Each structure stands twice: as C-alpha cells, then as structure tokens.
Length: 391
Ligand SMILES: Cc1ncc(COP(=O)(O)O)c(C=O)c1O
Image (cartoon, rainbow, N blue to C red; front, side, top):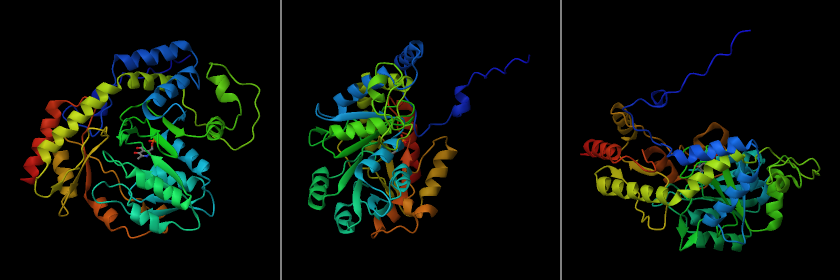
C-alpha cells in the first residue's frame, strides 16, 4: 500500500517574502491555539456550544440584552440572510453605495433584487444620505449603510430615513466592530446589523459572520435559515447534540458557524481591549506621519469612539498606480478597497444616481498595511517611504 504523502510544514516565507510588509496580518497568539485545540479535543466540530458562547460574548460587545445575535459562517452569509429578512427579492430594489464590498452586491443579487447605486460622502466614504433619500422609490425594500474603514455613517439620519419611508436598513458594520456611535455600541441601534470575522477583520474566527436583530421572530427565522431550514435544530445543537426531530418550513442554507471557529473568536474577543488599543495607536501614528503631505489625503477621524479597521489614503493627481508600484518595489504591500461595483460587468446596467465622488475615490483609494499590534519598525518604514514619495 502506498503511504499517503505528508503535507509539508508550511513556512512563513511561503506566505509572504521576509522583507515584505503585508496589508493585513492576523494577530493570533497562544490563546487562539489553545482555544482551537480545546475545540478539537471536545470532538464536536460543527454548530455547538462554542457558537452559543461566542454569540453571548459578542452580544456583550455589540448589542443590548434585548437584541439577538446569530453567528454564521461568513459576513457574506450574514448579508444574504439580512436581504431575506428585509424582504428583498425579485421586483424589489436595494439601495447601496457602489463603493462597497462585493459581498453586499452579491447578497442583493442572490435574492434576485436589483441594486441601486448611491454615491458616497467625500469625507467619510460612507453612503451619501441626501442622495440615498432621492433614490428611494416604490420598489425600495432596503438601504445598505456601511461604515467605511474608520468612519461611521450618520446613523441618526439613517434612522430618520428608515422611519420616514418605511424601508429596512441593513447596517454593514463589518469594519466597525467595537466602535460606538454617540456612546451606543455599533450593532445596538440598527434594524439589522451584520459583522464579518474573516481572516483580515479586527476580530477573526478565520471565517465567520454574525447578525444582530431586534425581534425574536427574526432570531428564530435566522436560526432556521442558517441550518438548512431545520426548525428546532439550533437550540439542540447548542448542547453539542444532533437534532433528529425537526420540521422544515422555509428555505435554508448551510450557513452556521462551527465550534472550532467560534472557539478562536472567543479567544480573540477575550483580547479585544489589546486589539483596540494597538489599532488606535497605529492609526494615530499614521495620521501624525502622513497628514499634510502634498498630493495625499489621509482620513480625518477622531478614533476615541471608533475602532479603526483599515488605514486608507487617497492618492491625488492620477499617481495611485505609480505610488503602489513604488511601495511594492520597496517591499510594502497595498490594497484597493474597493473598485466601485458599477464598474463590474455584472452590475454595470443597474439603476444609479450621480456617482461623481465614487468615480474619483475609486481611482484614488489605497489601503496601507494596518495590523493589530503593528510592528513600530514596519510602520515607520511605511511612513518614511510614503513621505519620500510625496516629498
Ligand atoms: C464591508 C464588508 N462587508 C462584508 C464583507 C464580507 O464579509 P466576509 O468576507 O466575511 O464574507 C466584507 C469583507 O471583507 C466587508 O469588508
């Protein structure tokens, strides 16, 4: 019998060359390894008790006792379920910034609704609510509001619009975990809020997501939809047991979070204060080092209440590609978050308002390396290189 080939030991250098500074770098410690090991040792790998614990811990951070937190396996899954809750479907429209993650757009498309593209504000790169209001029509079911990078939307105004027009708000808070708006935790004031815990997020479960909803009926609906429609199954599985007796009343998906992932998320949440502190420090260091350089715009944001997820810059005068290749030559990786969605083939014919700011930002935006516990040496290197480029 031929022996199975052993997987070779992965080396760090396979992931990133030693000299390079990646855009994202997860901050995983012994605590996450121990948590993962404990979940493996438990032997119950799927939806189970760790998921319930993770939801409870997350609730403490993003919601009030009256809310319900439902964990799923990606942010995209959370968005898809949010669209179903909002009643978006064929013949309806969902207003969204074109400057958004493609996961939001695919969630709208997945339920058969039509995205309607709205412009963003120049200062916060979040949805322009004046323009969003003008795009609301008889087919509008929901508006996606997304807090970009290190900014928050004007959520008072969002609430006002939702009440005035009777549309559902889907709050994409993937970038805003742990932030507060006028003292209220992000997640606690929205109609439907979602988070992502993908590998690069402020808190990772490797892959994962969550929804925060207010009504018990919606919690129950989500419990069914994340477990291929099986009624009663979530409750049983929280006890690390299989549900053999259940009814199926609605369409569902295999979107539940698994114990192993939830265990890692719990370890991350236990270290959340350290994560926040180091991210705020890195953000302020960047602003101090880069603000005022000719040809460059940096975010203007007080991060006392905000937990920054990204550090983006805007490169003016058509120099974005030159800037990115200069940094790449010097071993610094950069990202583009994002290409506007109306530039993609699938979405190019969708209804839209004026997208002037989106067009400009889409050509200027660059994400610089930004990590929890970012190495001061790495950050100083990035700052000096950027200064040298613009001076
Ligand atoms: C704003 C935003 N929404 C949604 C998502 C999708 O989350 P996930 O990658 O967990 O599917 C992301 C992921 O990067 C995101 O940045």
